[in-house]
Amino acid sequence: MQNLGIRAIFEGKNFHRIFEGLFVTVEIAFISIIIACLLGIIIGLSRTTKSKPILIINKVYLELFRIIPTLVWLFVFYFGVTTALNVDLSGKVVSIIVFSLWGAAEMGDIVRGALQSLPRHQIESGKALGLSYFGLYRYVLVPQAIRRMLPGTINLATRMVKTTSLVVLIGVIDVVKVGQQIIESSRFTFPTASFWVYGFIFILYFIICYPLSQISKKLETKWNA
Amino acid sequence: MECLGVITMDKNNNTILLNIEDIHKEFDNTEVLKGVSLSLHKGEVLVVLGPSGCGKSTLLRCLNGLEKIQSGDIKFKDKSLTQKNTDWQEIRAKIGMVFQNYDLFPHLTVIENILLGPLKVQKRDKTEALTQAEQLLERVGLLDRKNAYPRQLSGGQKQRIAIVRALCMNPEIILFDEVTASLDPEVVREVLDVILGLAKQGMTMVIVTHEMGFARSVADRIVFMDQGKICETSKPDEFFTSPKTERAQHFLNIFQY
Image 1 (cartoon, rainbow over the protein chains, first blue to last red):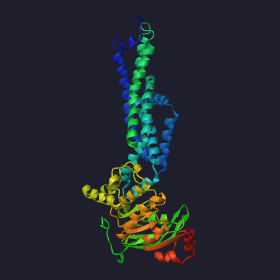
Image 2: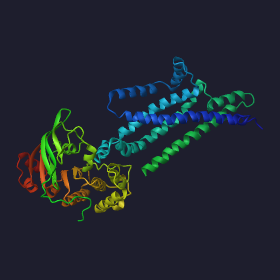
Image 3: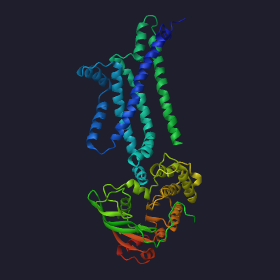
Image 4: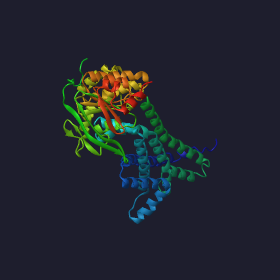
């Protein structure tokens, strides 16, 4: 029988290691997404004010994370900030910080866009009922904004999951890195390993991201019903 | 007709609910209200007429604080509404408003729309508020739609729900801002009938409309505005048969083919 590369995945502890790597990927992505959502909501709400300084700070923050590649941010924090402040941060912590900040900037923009896209009438008819500012947001604006935020948020979440593959470059052993190691160590025993290992990782990413878009589809149809 | 949550009042009762004294309002240096004075008695139906841009909608919006006035004073039951510490939330619960675009909250069902104010603003008992809401819905013939979402309703139905939503707060005054302007002609009537019913019950109302026939039948007094000022105030029959000012005559001529 042909020497099938697929066996590289199950050789020794490889299978187990791939899932360890996957766990690192999911951990960084998941924690960052949660922090990004929470921070993003605060940022988004703050961007609906009329206060110029707050708007400018937010704008600069958002643009910095949009213009500068995420990889550069990872380097800036991992090599630059840690030495400048003389703190010792692991690659994983740096990854979570950078992904959270990036996600929060984008999330803030999604929240702002959703709030501002609501018709002005909604605010007025809420006020006309005697709702307080808090009540207006709590019962009228935020529930409607969430529905509008959903597609953008899911899109951002899947982008964040995928972009975690960059953390390899600051020494974090994620699922892609484990894959590389397996391929390299089995170069002679299973020459076709790269196809199978990367193929397997492809499926793993798909398994993480696909449910996200399914959930968003479900919720959208439910809310539009 | 049975009175449901609406205070029935003798129209000869002379209590002044709202007193507007020489109010001025400008947007970006354009003066929209140039000194408007008016008083509204309890149980009175005031209809404000006038060409587009004459400031009638703005006047209405100043009355519940959606627009801030630059000078003058508005008194609601002898309490000035132009103070820094005016509690607009409390006032708005007493001065209801229905808008042109029947702005129901699209993410809430009909009954949730109606109960939002009574439960969250007035903190009323749920069963009691629900009973009132259902009675009001029945009166406008929409009780069977109470669990529908706004998007499942026609324009006329939405506007009737919006009126019920305002009524369920048990307001002392309701402001109607061109509530039939964006409706199809065939459903205008069902909305106007509801307002006419309220008038018969003695609800105090200020109505901005372009429906002349309706204005004539519902109004106790007609206020004609032009260019940010009140040109004349008359009894409806007087206004429509022999308007005092030339501008009002001109305005009425436009509506006759």
